[in-house]
Every structure is written in C-alpha cells, then in structure tokens.
Length: 132
Figure (cartoon, rainbow, N blue to C red):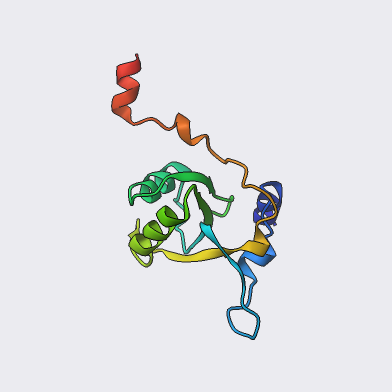
C-alpha cells in the first residue's frame, strides 16, 4: 500500500507498471527512456542506483525508489543512453542479486516523473573537498 501511494504521488500507475501482461495479442507500448528495475535488495538506496546507472554511460534524470526498495524506476534524458545502459546492466549483479530490467510501459507514466533526488546536488567527495 505504501508503494502504491508513493508511486501515485510521483505520477506513476503502479498497477500498469507491474501488472501488465507480457503475453496476449495486444502489444504494450514501452518508454524508450524509462527503465523499471526489479529484484532490488532491501538495502538499495537512490544514490547507489544513480551512481550505478550513470556509470554505464547514461545521463540519469530521475530515480524513484519506493519504501519497499524492491523495485525502482530510472529515467534517462536520452533514449540512446538508456538503451546502452539497459544492455550493460541487464542481469548484472547489484549488491548480491541480479538486476531484472524492463522498459516501463507508457501507460504507467501519467506525468513527468517528479525528482526523488536532486541529481545535480550529488557531488563526488573530491568535489566537495574542493568547495570547502
């Protein structure tokens, strides 16, 4: 219930996000910039996910991580960067579990994802020391 409220507040339809059918006649239209990340450990956090997904060549715009921390939504600025990152990270190990990635269904995204973290405020430790 907490996850549902969290995603509703962020403009995401959780039922459409995880309850879509992968079989059937109807093709589901998928985002080319937003990735659904499944099978996350409960120790996941936004900063680690931003670093992980940014390190594979993509400019991460937003990361949504609900209270359960079992799944996340990662939005990229450009489709080609999202695609490259998807290919590099699918089924790779994060902490102690493999990442399950899929392109988010367009029907799940009701509005622009509200930033869960201000990514431009995440500064490497070296940069922080330089500013002091």
